[in-house]
Length: 307
Image (cartoon, rainbow, N blue to C red; front, top):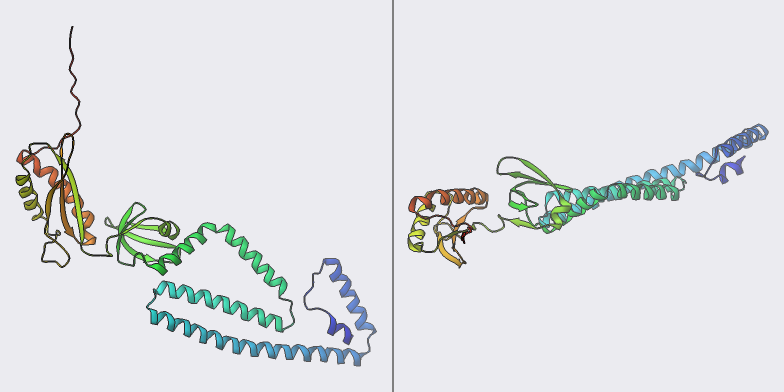
């Protein structure tokens, strides 16, 4: 009996028949083995398992202490670099999960349990989950890129994927943007990391350029005076008194076949860009006709000749 208790592997691949057979053999062995030998073998097996259990507990205590030390070192490293809180939190969670998984596998191996099959099961499960969540993995990788390279931060006004608004939050898989009409748009980080991002807050204030056409014969000096006077009615348009801004400017952009292209440039803050852009379009459309300046549009003259 002593030999059986010591040599039987802790983990094997058992079928239903093999389990039943081994159970019958164990019962027969117990019946035929003298009580003193049975007791001696049992005590020896318990003693060996007890030693393994004490060693596993010691490994757990030391391992838990080391994990705490590693987490503190990583946390201090992020604090010194001034890294984004979302990135540091994610990395800390990932490192903690990996370290605890390794510690548990070491403890299980110390108890005499074969960890090869457990590791294979974990690998197969991870692969299956990764294939099922390929889109999420792409967004996950995109989140790491955004948090590492920081093309924008919380509070910035950006224009991306057809959405303009203020960045409300950046998580590891998606980014939330609050639009100017108070809608919350959630965008996947995978698309953001691989797309074009127009950050209006990276450099403030911003120059807003608006172009439109007027017919030939228009007095440009008069038009310039009208537009400059028009900009004074919008308090969100900045002047030279604001650092980085310049006074509004009007100039001829191009001479087209049937019209003159005029450009108006003003300076605004990032959060006011779209609002001033729409306001100027409407104000110009209403104001210029009052001064006899109309907007040219494509026309076709048809002459019919009767024989």
